[in-house]
Image (cartoon, rainbow, N blue to C red; front, side):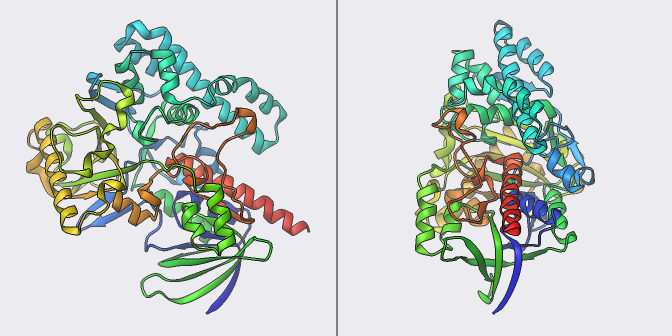
Length: 524
């Protein structure tokens, strides 16, 4: 067994871990990143199944070129913002069915969004204007407060305090609370505004209003974008930041233990070759960045540390999971009429917005009747740089839960997946005649797939459920990468919010806290 020393060890190469590692390496610290899989990026990756390239998820993100986008400052600081090709995806989404009925496209920009919504729902024009104004103010206030902290600017902090008033007023409320306040009974309008709720969760009654305002506000302000070459391009750029600064990125290495000292501080990790479970190595580390669930990190520790982690995180509800039905086509989807980057269909049984998550349990059995709420992602609606030639990817995504697949035999699970692929394909054929004639391959990833590949409990793709906080705004942001273990930080969605932006912001905050600890140790 060999022993090595680094300032920081990062466990996992999802966007949070890569961001934390890149920022620490950029600051001059020695970094070693360990990834149990044989490719980097976690959910932010593209991989090949047969001859089909598959994007691990939808991966439309807010456009980082906007200076107020959550990713802009991070990527600019690392010098890679302009090395990535951002492809605007047009309208944020098109939604139809359910209370909405005929298709409605939500455009980019607060003014354009208001005009489109007011044209569709003229009796709610004033309420829509107030609502979008509040979303924009909360989005801008959070950006201003972040800048004030980073720059130590009293002027910006003062301005942020003034801007943050709407956030303070709704700090402990759910999205459903605010929708009911502003649009009571206007279910079609609620669905038009929140059709992409699956980006964040599955129940508006439990989704934190402030999180929705910041995240959705970012999409409306910046527009959606897809990274040319797939989300893996961002992961590769971040990994290169680590290696370019002299750090190490090692794949196929499974971390088996996080060691703590007599004072309960994380001081080292042990890891082995994943396939052979041999070639153990030990790395001493001044800080450990866990790009994984707290329960996964806790399982690698001794009993006292495990108990502390369980006390801090064990009772927190987990987020939803997703399924992804991926079809390889011999021609672009536009040939049969699929033109939007993202189109969302609501079932006729959904008549209220608070029924959004009702279909999350559908895959517990065989398909019957109409499909539950689902989104179609047509990556060739933009210059994606991956599917210019067949097979061409089209994905259908929806809500899922690991409970839907527990206790099911391998054979029965395979039969159920095929039945769902049949049902989804039949739906697409009915809506876009000729679709089935384009299909050359297909595969269904479910909550079990998410759990296995991402090593996340219950297949929770977004970390902890984004619930409203139980304490007022004066107590600060309710989620933090800090843990009860000294020197251990959560550089993942579990340390903040989720999605591209949430994971990267969590990684950046974890790096900031780790840097502060490293600097303090150097001055002792």
